Length: 322
Image 1 (tube, rainbow, N blue to C red):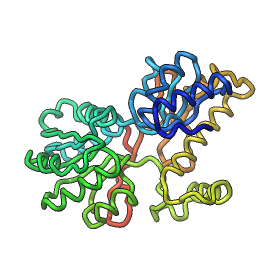
Image 2 (image 1 turned 30 degrees about the vertical axis):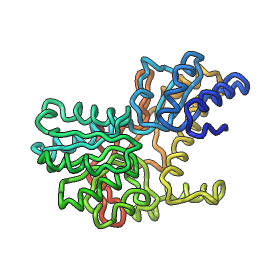
Image 3 (image 1 turned 45 degrees about the horizontal axis):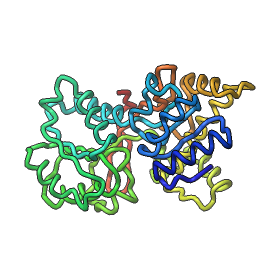
Image 4 (image 1 turned 90 degrees about the vertical axis):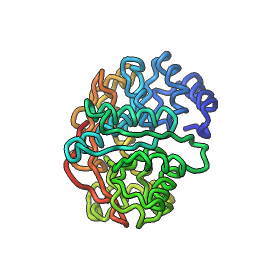
């Protein structure tokens, strides 16, 4: 395990060390979109399994371009398609405005939204505005989107701009139906800074059991995770969804290794990673299963919608497959 400091040049340096000096079998759950983009060609050229990448960028599910790479979480395109499918079924005449991060992740979300809305995209998506991660605020973008006459707002980005957007919407007296991306659905880093009362009614998508949700209080899967945390990572934050995420990806990797049996070659590791069938994990929302194939490098593709009630997220509706 080597630290890249979330710096792409450092990622390249550390991964080369792992592959060429340590001769590792695979690279597992490496974090971030720019950091993984920096190493994806190198790992595929050297035929090193690059598994369960911690990023929702659609490029890591592109089995044709990168046959040795596989994401894990619902990718940003699929996530946006889930929201679009819900709106097409329940509110087909809404006018949507979308605030998105000006990078590949933001563009993936907007692409998924347009693809999910299909032939209604031009009528339903009336305005978009982007922001840079370095922008001090997103206030001007929210003012512009309000002026579009939209009655539904998508906030697609990371925690800080999402919190700013929710607060500005409230301060303007604008009351659209709001969606935040799964990447900005943290109560601690988004809803609380924005103002809990200002966040009531916001919708997002989920695929993991949230340890702060009282719905899972007596759930065996969550209890198993809490026991694991207590034993192996007692200093870890049990309200941090990333600790749930890490546990779930690790369990997926364990399943791949079990399926490998005694053949722990890189080729077989990749073959088994692309041969997961209806895998249920105790920490995934019930009904969500992991499936992969040689042309399907998106292990988790389903989500359930959740609505914020002022204290916590409450799941509603059926499992949605985009």
